[in-house]
Image (spheres, rainbow, N blue to C red):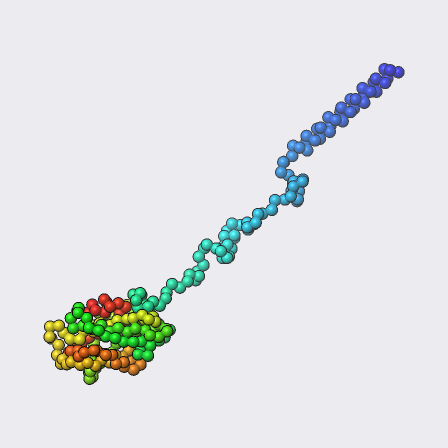
Length: 249
């Protein structure tokens, strides 16, 4: 009886050992698979990876195309550049382009012409060049104005206006901002006495031009302070942005 019992116990132990070996073998087979194998929800016990904030799932080329059009893009957008062109005052030396005849006019009338109604005129004698005077126009209005071409001058009972120095034509019309000035040089007579038909007068009237080269507004009387001798060489410059430029001719 003892022998039979021993044999049964040994058989049970062998069967238990075989079952354990089989279980270990099955576990080893399962662990040999890919470590990252996962179903739709990712590996067991972990969440499926999601794109981080600010990234795009679109192809790089598509993403670049969209971000260049979106807010905050560093890429330039055609037509987005702010127009750097602006109307400058007379003191800056910069003038709007293509404003018309003789460096004046043709600007579409965005600003009024300078006239006796929105400016003040003064004229002074200068030591150099000899026989020259400086005519100054100052904007007394609240809006910039165009000083077109050159002023029409009438000394005394003159029947015509003096010629202009064509070499003094500026690149474009002179714009005079409120409180600022533009200048014209006036050669009253020849220094070598070559002029003819000379006379002296203490009266001067000044007129302005418009964009078409026609008289704009009324003539303005400008005090000379003393008699001035003028002759056939009388000439003026176009309106300039500086006194030095006005007295170069």
